Image 1 (cartoon, helix red, strand yellow):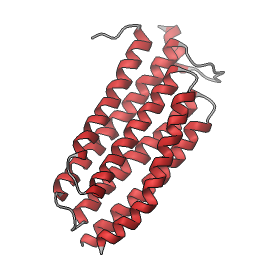
Image 2 (image 1 turned 90 degrees about the horizontal axis):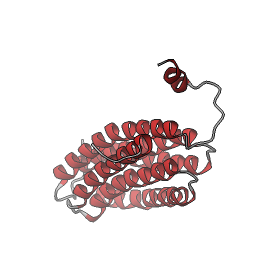
Image 3 (image 1 turned 180 degrees about the vertical axis):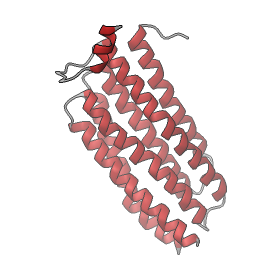
Image 4 (image 1 turned 30 degrees about the vertical axis):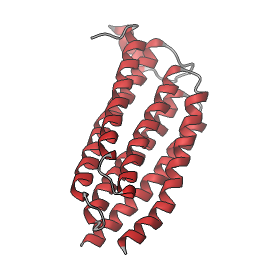
Length: 119
Length: 93
């Protein structure tokens, strides 16, 4: 039973590392702030939440850890906090960048400006 | 036996996370506008939280986990304060 939990957590850590690297390459290579938000979401949700849940499972299954329940519970809580905080922060940052007109771009459709013009 | 498997896993996982953090740092120094820099610092903070949880298992210590929770909350606070400053021109309640 503990071997199943351990290897499931190890698989999730490897998946998280690969997602993290792909998100970093996207954040470096994408042309625009609003496009870079997509890569940042891959880097935070896939690269931080998935390995934190993986560490929770891995430390529940690991028999060589002295404080395994404390590490499992605290990493699960950290994963839930990042799962709630990262989309809210990215949304607030995108709204602020649109409102302060910091980023040069040519949109096909700009629904936020249309809504503000109709108000 | 599980400990040997974990050490092999660390040889695979640690270079991935370190390389990702280095690439995020390059974007944080090159970023042309303020939201790019803040986004890169956010990604560094969240990935450092996950990496600290991995290091807590690696060093068999429970004290690194509290730092991970605080780091995640601090990155969210940085987001909200910079967004408020850019949208309204002030950092207040």
